[in-house]
Length: 420
DNA sequence: TCTGGGGTCCTAGGACCC
DNA sequence: TCTGGGGTCCTAGGACCC
Image (cartoon, rainbow, N blue to C red):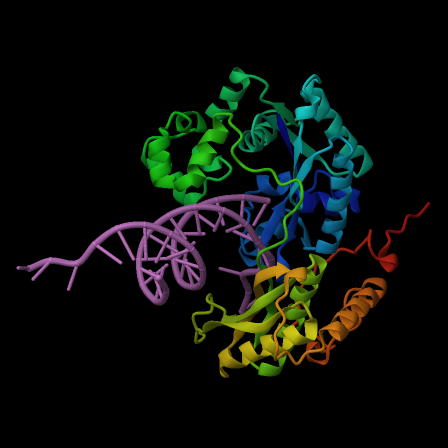
């Protein structure tokens, strides 16, 4: 048996922790640049605000119902997430962090317990210790526990836990769940399935292996077996190192000049390099891309990317910046209104597996010492106190974030104040 | 008219997730 | 005026090898 624990409307719940007045009041959290709604409280969902809708399209609704709007505050959400995960860890010996607000728990060692009661305990503890409401779904496979979680949210809201303990309880949720709402079925497969007469998950489990294999590849087949109660998706108790790392942003305003783009690319590269060092990896390839805003029909459109191969795998910030700017130089064209750019490192290898080159001019030992020292300083004094010249200090491509809450739990200057 | 057989690696594109 | 950011896996087809 496996449990999926999911934080309810996570970003909204994090904001409410420090604004308890907003309990029962509609809350929306916006994406970077205050672009789209990416989290909605139940009250906001009830107003018809859809996931991913641009803010300007719902502005009237937001104002009319006095919805409390926040810019996304990932520093805060990341820290609250850590606290939730650390608490979950106290319940089981094996768990998998699935996303910022979800974790799979291995319940197999608890076979003699009443798992429904355990789910209720987990929910109560997280609410009491951290203040975040969670829902728990328990079933035989990852896919079924995902479904149980959704079923709990829809049908057993007050308990907030659903345990598909036997065939009857499993069938109930299979019948309730439409194919489009199965974890692993997106828009394309949902269309395929409904066109072929499969309406609910209960219909889908009757499909033949051959048909599913043929139309949905082995991924679909695994999913089918999972729904029949046969665990078929691997468990990852330890997060494997990333195979691709990307840092990209839309700009707060459109950008035309190369200098500013260089500054952005240098900063995104520094961020990728830091992520590489944190997972003890190096890259042999760096890609730079930029694009104009496709929604501005009045603008000339341009989108390009360039991959630069490195002679020796590295995770050194200045070295990577050098290659990234080389890539940018090859794709930059004057006269366009750029809306976004980004940096991706691919072909990532563990840092012990670097193949050195005979013609290498870099002093890699020195690089390593410099990186280590700078990372330490930046951890101690705030995220990017020490930067390379190309990164600049005055950020000319700043993000819009008009409704940003404070970093209550991670920054000493932003602690919440309480009047007694 | 007729043009082998078997393998690997790489890439682009499509599907999905939060 | 205004439309997010960061990932994974699988497959088909082409290049290349012997």
